[in-house]
Image (tube, rainbow, N blue to C red):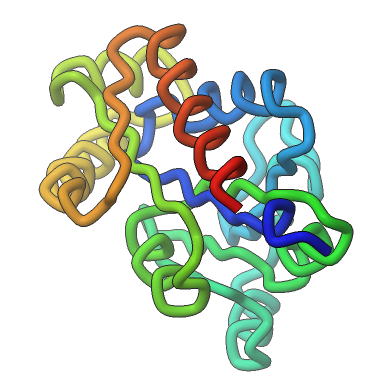
Length: 190
């Protein structure tokens, strides 16, 4: 396996900032990159399927896997647990594919330790008010959950300086092009 193909890209930022949309665009432009499907204890939203959007696990199964060392990273967010299964990433790397992880700040920090060569990118909103609008327009969360996410977002935004790469998602096309430039640059560096 070439080093070029073994890159791991960590995409993080506040909930509702557009990480998923940017990654979808990235995967269209850089088709060799594969998305690692995260595990979560939250319930599936309408239209979500196990193994596609997430691996939906019971809290007990999640904890058993944590204790068994099956996660590269794991975190608690909005009263649920999220994590990246080691097997999800390792399988893709062995197959020679670069991998993208869409994870929360806590997990991104853990990846710095477990995979120090991973490329870390922070996605930020142009301002907190735009993040509020995005969360409200999704229609997937109750007002109290949106407020909780915004409180966490403020803390996460304070950490963006920890990341060597930062993309402000003010315009989806511009942000997608910036993310693609970062990824292509890092793939060609290897």
